[in-house]
Length: 302
View 1: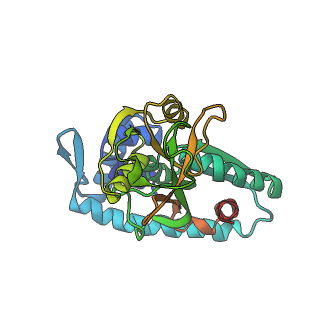
View 2: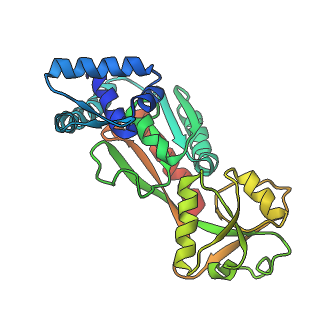
């Protein structure tokens, strides 16, 4: 087995602080600090340096992590080969996903897994994109379904295996009396003078809105902030502004709003990807979970 203190060091690199690392790992900050001090003592090198309220990894720590990433990936592959000696699909697969992907992709995938592999336990959790990488490293989830952002790990990061799942168009959400409500489709620039509903705490969606509007030639005038789709929908229905919403995002059926498909080049869309720990995709629970997600995604692109 791999020294669990190495997992703690990996999460610390991702989170940046002892407190955040402890939260992800469900440990106390003092336990995290003790683990890292013990690891440094056993290795005979300094691993951390103080950097204000954060800590900075030393060059020796990065050397340790380079080897650790290889060790963990190989261990994930080894677990898959060991499990191949068992009959049937059993164990547990845990999903973490952004809300719209959880509703439209993960839930159907989980239902399929429950029907086809009754011995496989499925766990699901809603989670924002920027949080899932630490959860994967902490082994608190197995498959993440997320929206990649500019500050996320690159596709060739040795810790993760990231794969495209679905390209999801964005719709303009307007009230029924809006001039664009009856046009069928619209250019995003046609809403340049409208007040907008922003979602600054939903970082991936907010960044996508700002980028799409910039590409259409304007900066949106953000009049109100809301993060949950039911709140965004309520504000639009009441005439307080317009918003960009993902095609898969569920909205309250009683709200009087109109989804306006967008046209132009480029049409705003967001890429939904899967991410697993590198090497774990060969393990039966993860492999079947990924296959079920691809099946659910295909339903939306057919």
